[in-house]
Image (cartoon, rainbow, N blue to C red; front, top):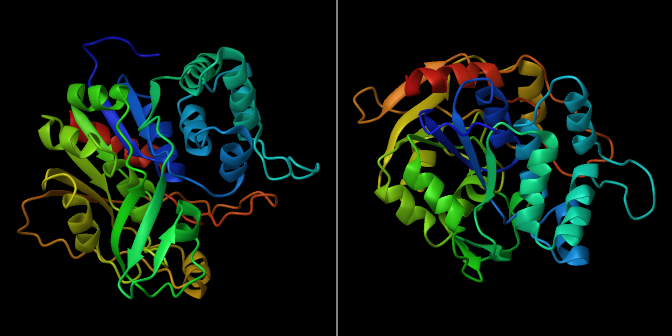
Length: 333
């Protein structure tokens, strides 16, 4: 792990695949890295971790640990093991080895927070992974027709009319920030938000009591990585400025820099996305805006194929870890 106080301190806030991609690239540089991870995921194997083990969701934590892990020699094998998803076996099909490992380790060491730290040692991670809260909480979304949905999974994969706009999103019950998270933000030189689903990966962190306040007070430069695609049921029809305006409601208009992809997306993937009413985010950030906007080629070449046992919807096209990291490091420098 990087421990030198002289290294630039970079804090990534989010969850899921987006934060995984960012961390995977940044760990190759001499930085003090911290990942603050959303604790509101309630879908897939997380639901079983919550219901059967009584733990906070572990999937986003696991992804960040793996992203920061040492990939050399036998550690590369451990990385693959922690991402392995069982595709057979009654009761464990669809579960990942990493989630089961952390559930077992929690029982052994006595706390989930300590289990996360010990898992980091096993994987020899380059940085630290911090749950945004240690409180058990759920997302609650209110839509413009009065519909109310509870739990992240139902908001993320809507069975209702996905054309409805989210009018308000809260936590039930209210959750308090993990002290380690607010401390990391206070000491940061750069804070990175996203990429990731706006209302189910990024905003949930900002709803935690103490996080918005920490971001409003930090002297760090705040960078937002713009999503590639809109999300049916969350951001259908959202432009780049729509994303920014939602985020700035929570952090006192503190975003300094926005990273935007300017490369054309693969037509094969766009055809698939169109079937689910998801479209490229239109870059409507005015040239005369107060933001520093960096537009670059940020797309990974490969179209993602998920495991057959993974029941959740995953993104087909993603940011390239190395391309993103190079842009972020240029901002730091």
